[in-house]
Image (cartoon, rainbow, N blue to C red; front, top):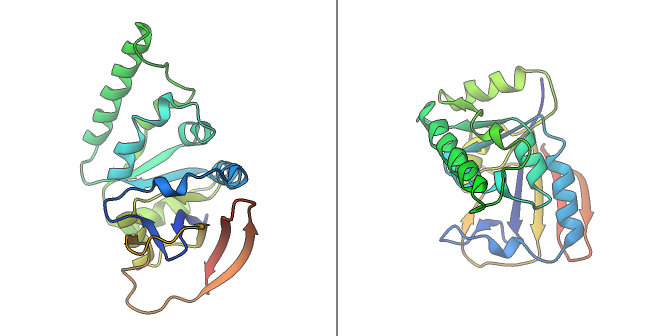
Length: 208
């Protein structure tokens, strides 16, 4: 049985984005925090996400040269969507278009592993049942990326075995909170904490 880890960057007041879904505040100049995040997600055996995040990431990472691109492209993925295989058809068409434009010099070429986005496992059944099936597979941990609605659902169902929260030194005042679907306080046990020069802190928790 492998763990499901929810990895999120959050503000000090607990938001994962502003009210419009923007999160540019989390991409600061803290290079060591970024390096930690790249190394951390590279330990996954599977990346999982909701359909909105999947459709937002799928056109971006295949051509990206950012440090996050290799683990995001080369590690298998699962998308939670009621659309079924149709969601992969959209991604495949996008990748074909990118490849065609790259051949004419109109866009960058596809990075290694880019095709994995069109080959993602589509989980369209009951959330708890789908997660149980994925956890039962052998391999490295599952890392969930969100978005926020998907993360809230995982938390509400008690499916998260570990929280990897990168706390960014910014207060938003208002935004989209991660833990808003809790029906009661959820005690957490701190497993490790690492502070970075730019002020971000990586906090690893397990449910107590």
